[in-house]
Length: 122
Image 1: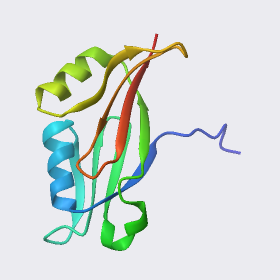
Image 2: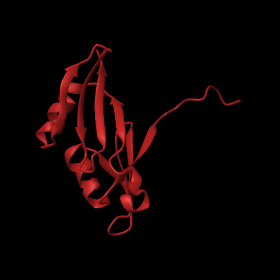
Image 3: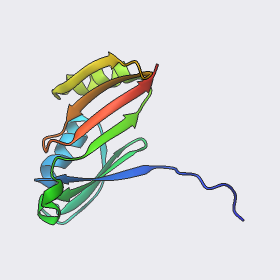
Image 4: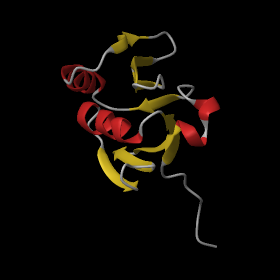
């Protein structure tokens, strides 16, 4: 036996209208790095920042899912992350707020309507 199993990373797939535009948003506005892209123009790609990995799939492959994802990412340094992202011109849907369930959170939507909430334990 090799030991106790561990879950190490979540990779989400977001359905987007335009993969190249989505790469630009996540790299330029959220501070991700591009991991890979398939094709030119890209027909699939992945970006990451720390433990957050997003695969970007065109809506033509899954149109019913466009803009329906809601990701929740636990972070440290939430207020600094908010300042960084807002400073890059991203519209913040819910500003940093302390909630009674023990988290401080802020939320945004990507250009395709997918919601991303960043949270930090109070």
